[in-house]
Length: 391
Image (cartoon, rainbow, N blue to C red; front, side):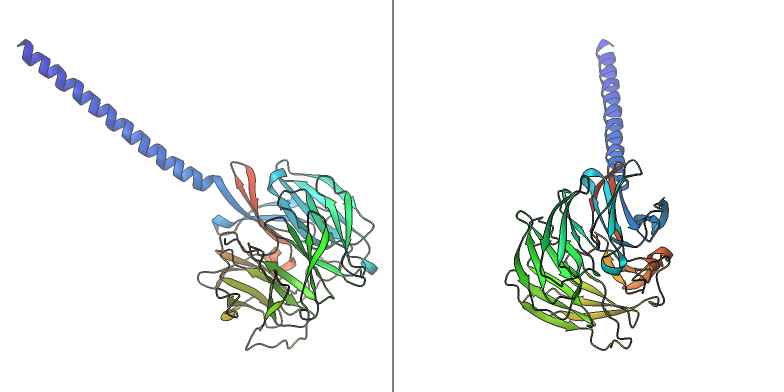
């Protein structure tokens, strides 16, 4: 009887152990599932659209649902925007772009505490700037209406002017890109057929790319900073150049389409997909976006693979003080799922090449970017230019 009782006790203990182990396994499995789900929901991808007067935020992961409006009444004639996740800051240039439009200003907005940290007014024009990856320096063009060839290096902490870079008298400083390495800034003048490359350590011009077609308009570079993709005044299409040699490789027209409106910049917008396989360009005269396969670069010329019809580019941005014509702009989301078309308001699904959403305030601006948050803290931002991220 004692032996039988011992076996029964042993069986009971083993059963209890099995129950405990099964429960522990179930808890661990659920914990892992919750952790995995938590990791996905804790990263938020937001599109920040910046018309005059404020910022509207959309949730990219929830079919671009509206999240909130940030009221910035001083924001008139916005010209550029950059963000710095390291300091949770959003910078917006606004005011005059030089000449008859007057001088400009820059504001710094604290994304964590929802407040304007400072505004800074300058004795020169402003335009579409770029920020270094470390968040310390902003390269601000002197403005497309100011023909003195200056870019101003600003300290992001307080907006102070550190240095001026002159690329040549008569150049109208307009668009700017800082490569992902942070080593080089790329400066494009509205009325100049060369792209200027600046060493950010010395702030000296170290290379000129071109000659390109008349006037450098929106442009972008790949991750390795070996290729630059530029649009030009009076050209429906884009060009590709070698950043190492400075030589033009290809001029690529949007075949089958013509600029019947004779716009000053018919392809005012270009974005390189994050995987660097495709380029999207604006066709404002015909209200299209054209898609090009660029996988074969630099050996093989880009090849047009799609034409996507948009909401018409008609009329002018509202509200607006100057340069109000709806010219267009394009930007990929960081994951490459979407392309956002400024001045038309359309959101394109890159998998289906179809317009899947229309954002009314995106009709009235060419200033917007993506900012990603994790656990309530900004961790990543695109620039306004659709840069490549492939290694």
